[in-house]
Amino acid sequence: MSNRRSFLVKSSAAAAVVSLDSALVACGGGNSTKPAQFTYGVASGDPLADRVILWTYAKIPDSTTPVNLTWQVCVDTSFAAGKVVSTGTLVADSSTGFTAKVDATGLTPGVSYYYRFVDGAGVSSPVGITRTLPAANANSVKLAVFSCSLYSAGFFNVYDAALTSDAQYAIHLGDYIYEYGVGGFGDASGTTGRAAPVPAKDIVTLADYRARYAQYRSDANLQALHAKMPWITVWDDHEFANNAFVTGAQNHNATQGDWAVRKNNAATAYHEWMPIRTESSNLLKIYRSFDFGGLLSLHMLDTRIEGRVQQYGFYGDPANADGSAYNYADYVGGIQTGADANRTMISKTQLDWLTGRFNASTAPWQILGNQDIMGRMWFPASVLGAQAAKGATADSVGQAVGAYIMAKATPAAARSAEQAGLANPLVNPRLPYNLDSWDGYPLQREGILRTASAMKKNLVAISGDSHNAWFNNLSLLDGTKVGYEFAGSSVTSPGFESVGLGAFAPFVDGSYVTKSYGSGMGLVDDVNYADTSRRGYLLLTVTATSVKGDYVFVDTIGSSKYTATIGKSITVNLDKSVSYA
Ligand SMILES: [Fe+2]
Image 1: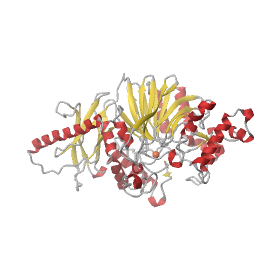
Image 2 (image 1 turned 120 degrees about the horizontal axis):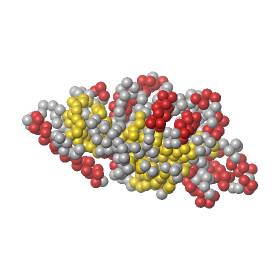
Image 3 (image 1 turned 180 degrees about the vertical axis):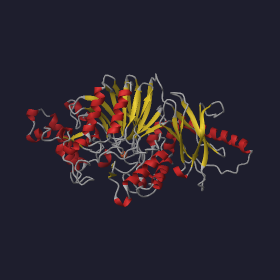
Image 4 (image 1 turned 90 degrees about the vertical axis):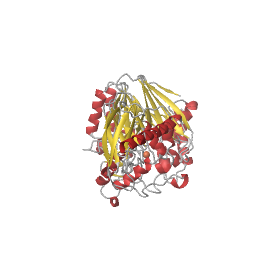
């Protein structure tokens, strides 16, 4: 157990003792009110310079009586009068599934605080630590960036690893929960000893979604990380259902009722359980910005639920959700034609908002907190075809990879006819492999990149969804490099290795062949680094002159005993130069 964690546990215990004393004083030693239990701990989130959302769950066992709570924010763990800087009351009741949250205001910028909730019987929640955003003159900001945390896939060692880091704020880019039941995607509960999904079936009703969040938040590592620092979160598809979009989802069918009802259930539970600043008039609007002390503006997008036109599937899908197979020819060179030209991941309203935020920010770094891979993941058609072929194996895909790289690395005059075909992009085009990501909506991506470029912004995207780690160029269709993308691996969800492509990474980014044949020989031009086999998170350090991403990986999620290591450190500088360590 780390020192920091011990401290957190100890301060919780100390706070409980303090509150017990005050309860005895207040009640004269007697207590007719049954105490509430804070079963899922505390959380904080959406920090601004003067305020932060505080969250808890409080319920009296075997009772539906509303629980009256006092919340307190204090400069230390004494919670003594005169040191409490923000306080008030709120209620946890059945209307919110006994979750409760409040926007604690009147705080000082860039300061760490302790907070807790106390019930009418004087019983205290665990004590959490939170932090406001710096208002100006920050030297550096440290963010721990997560995505794709499938409880039944394995242990949340990645959250525990971040607990011992020096991160100040946690960012979760979505797939905080998954909707599947027992035996669904990535369920390893049968082999790891991890509990099976609760409820056992796909979640659909509000009660289902609430129960699923409760299961996730019963995890000690997740609770501890929520208690340690404020989180800034957005949802991706699995907080709703796989490959969701505005009017449906791949994993939603008629027996599960109306999509709009399910979507509202999912959004309601999300707002109940996550420490997010909720606009109660529109639960589906979660895109928002955060300004960190003049260093960076973080724009959290919703590319999933708010404005997404239905996606096409992966290369080789025989039929997509709408019955169509996408037309490869439309995607050659990333150009969409016809009706596809209007495909959007975010609404015009959100796009206009983002443009306005770019325009208003004077920070040296504009960071897009975004669900899906934004860089161009264009693979050679020969490799995608081998991967999608019936009976594909790691060997057969590997052969296609090798043939392509050898063809490219062979001087043109020395190529065989077959190699000449493989190397010729008109014969063997580079195609996006996942049209659920920004690659399926390239014109809208192009617009955002051009806007940032025209405004001379230093653009960095942080992305989740893919379950693997990437560092990509953000390029215009004409090849102009506009910015970079740090995409962290998943907390637990299975990645490329689950389909036999764990050894794929050095071929994707070209690091395997660069030594022999020179740079630019990888499968995917805009990928500079990849890890296609390990779970982890991204530790981002932002200063006025650089953004450094440490790709932290754990060696296992199959047991709660693990080792964490930094797999790669990549630094982006203001002049767009990059260094690797
Ligand atoms: Fe995911």
